[in-house]
Image (tube, rainbow, N blue to C red; front, top):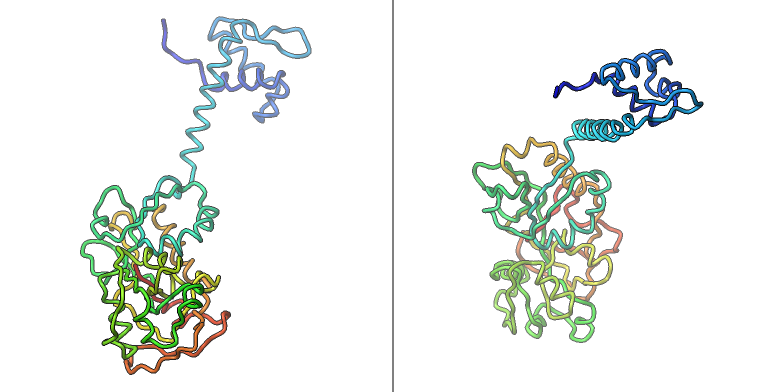
Length: 337
């Protein structure tokens, strides 16, 4: 038995004629003459030594042998069309795994994720809450959004945003246990999103380094300490990126007008070979563009507790209206883990 396939053009003519029910319709679809289609079908029948159509009626009908051939031809052309479509799809399709600092992932990235999905519907994301720099060299991870100093050898990295820190609390908590001055923090539970250094920085700037501390809890990251503040469990440190929308919605308030710069910043990083991949490039470009386009509200001081610290790096800002932008503007915004 010969494995030689029939010629392609006669098969196309046969499939189109069988599907459309007439030679004329097939000719219009394939943009050839009526005679060309008839010639191709005759050539295919001679090649196969079989009659494929019953002739004589207004609409062509398949013979039993033509009915046997048609499903195989239709499936073959369908598979060829599908493969061709895949070849022509943009390179910005497929799967992308991104690790992100937990607080930024929950409070900033996820609320904006629909924008990326609308622009790149063929990209399927796997998002992992992590600030582990070891993931930079993991073959299972494509892009890392990290909070740190940006000093990671042998990888591509770019500063995304700096941040400033300030205390945050739920309105319910402050209404039941006011914060009239920084000394009143002694009466509240303090929540840390790190080992305590960030609160030490803020208290030093507030001339309250010697503050007698009450109860304190330490969390693995700022997302958890922020959630504790949201639930009215105590006072946490927020920042100008991850806490901004929660403040704008009134879910959190800023009891003091003092902000301090964080020690580290947000960076986007990945292996050098992945930076050139189109699917990674579109996500990174979107991530930076989203920050530039973002109009973050300025944290509004909600209590009469204006501080007069002495640290020259601390920022003292008056009570502001919700419509003002955060200090530092988009190119100087700061963020943290």
